[in-house]
Each structure stands twice: as C-alpha cells, then as structure tokens.
Length: 168
Image 1 (cartoon, rainbow, N blue to C red):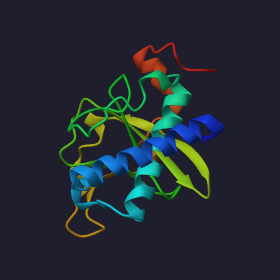
Image 2 (image 1 turned 120 degrees about the vertical axis):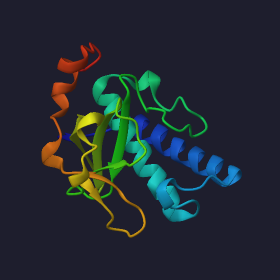
Image 3 (image 1 turned 135 degrees about the vertical axis):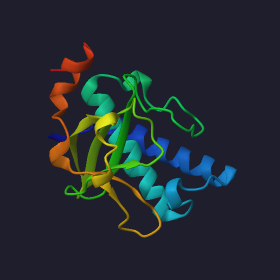
Image 4 (image 1 turned 30 degrees about the vertical axis):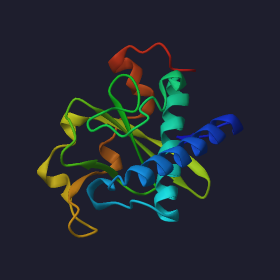
C-alpha cells in the first residue's frame, strides 16, 4: 500500500528526527545493535524511522499518540496496541526485529524509497521469533529478518484489535 503524508505530517516527522538525533548525540546514546550513533547517516535513519511511524499512525488514526517517548526506552512501543514500526530504506527489504524484542509487540513494516512510502503490513511478535528468520547480513549484528510475504495486510489490523480509529 502506498501511503502519502501531508505537508504538516512530513514536517512533524522530520522535526522529530532532528530532535532524536540531537538528544542521542547529547546523551551519547549508542546505536541499536551496532547501528549508527551520530552524523548525517544517523540523521537519515532517524528521518526514515520517524516518517514510517507517522505513516502508520496517520493510517490508523493514532497521530495523537505519536512521538510520546522523548528519551529512548527499552521495550517501549511507538503507538497504542503495542505497535512498533520498523522502517527500511528499500521497498524490497524484509522486516527486521531485534533478537531481544518482546513477543507481545505488533511489528509494522514501512519502506521509504525515492520519496515514496509503502506500508507493507504487520505481524504479531510471536510469529517473528523463528530460528529460520535469523540472519546476519552485516556481520556481527544478528536479527530476525521476516520476509514481507509473512506479513498480514495493513487493513486486517483492526479486525484483530477492534480499533475504531482506522480511517476509511
């Protein structure tokens, strides 16, 4: 599903990315699982992440709950219904779930490439933690790589969780 953010949503997401980068650099926060910590590449990752979170929040009508954690908190979720949004920079990339994530989360995959956002789908955490999904393509950074064809369509989420916020 291609999703379009309005100008205000884009602006809020990019401001949030800058805020996150600033806080992380000030606090010398380490990148998750050996990821980028500072500099322009780290900022791009924050931008991609914040835009993906905005897309899912906007799609589900949950923008009021967005960006509530001002400092990174282990095991926190991005949105109600235990939603944790994972955003990748290529439309063909799989969903990445870290080895130490909690099973009770609902993981959503967004991809952003060539200024186009795709909401790929979602999956309950319990279905991610399979040995066959563990990969280490970057070397020394194992994680679960859940193929896109294992994700459930975005429109099925409210059937599972009875959320009435989903905009038609």
